[in-house]
Length: 379
Image (cartoon, helix red, strand yellow):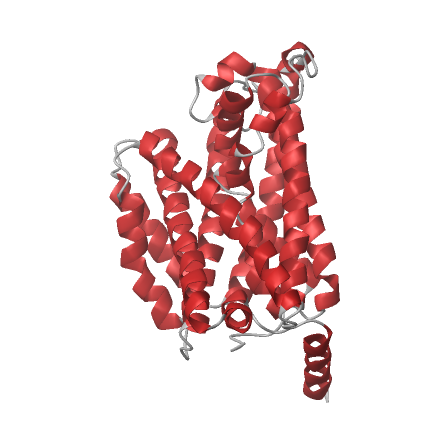
């Protein structure tokens, strides 16, 4: 792999994965999963989805560890051959590009709805892309350093919001438990996969790790953290707004934040502060996917530099982000991405792992080569 910077630690991998996952999903998940489940057992679906995503993440890491120091764009040709690998690599890159555009469009929709009313979407989209390219051009280390600061503040603010909203929490909104059996719970697994989109970056950043042996730990910690956040969010939103109240709202999480105020303190209404910080979290998801899309193009086509690719992607991201005519089409695009991710990062990596074992590609021999290379570099 052409290294554009130094190796990253296990904790930095956790930061990358969490920031790649936590984005627009936390705002849309309560509505999409409630429509699918139609029972108060939505929180069980979140737990099941988290377990499945954790297993898939371990699968991705296991596949990557067979080819140390190589991203998915570099080791797939060894498994499938050159031409099939181009097709697989292009699918992943296109997925990243569309997901980038989706996150930017959601940022524009939320901004025009809650913060900058009457501001055209194209203005917000363009500003977000240009601010993003300024940060992304500094490399992965710069992006990580920025969101190492943003993530703890965002999570602290989210915890404060949950604490304040607990005064309106009604436990009866979460009952009865499994009143209609397990079938509704199973229906909620598929819609929640979009909210976990981001774990697939493990296919790239595993190659950049200082200690690849801790990749399983990094994957589990990341998914566990996101699952806990999603679980608490779902429980609090359902407990505050009730299931029927959620299904009629576009952004249930934001509506929950707007439903309370604290008189006599510096901030009487917290939704503006929460929206601003969560927009930064959505921006983090976009930034990492933009960088990895450019990195994928570089590795797939054996190019030398990544900077020109990042700038070349800007008009493509803008056009795709502006393509949905309204909010409904934007959310439909998100559902489509969720369906694609199940195949592209669930079934396909499993197939690649099986083929690599059958064809004896990678494995212990590659691991030994990787360890010898690392020892040679240290010397």
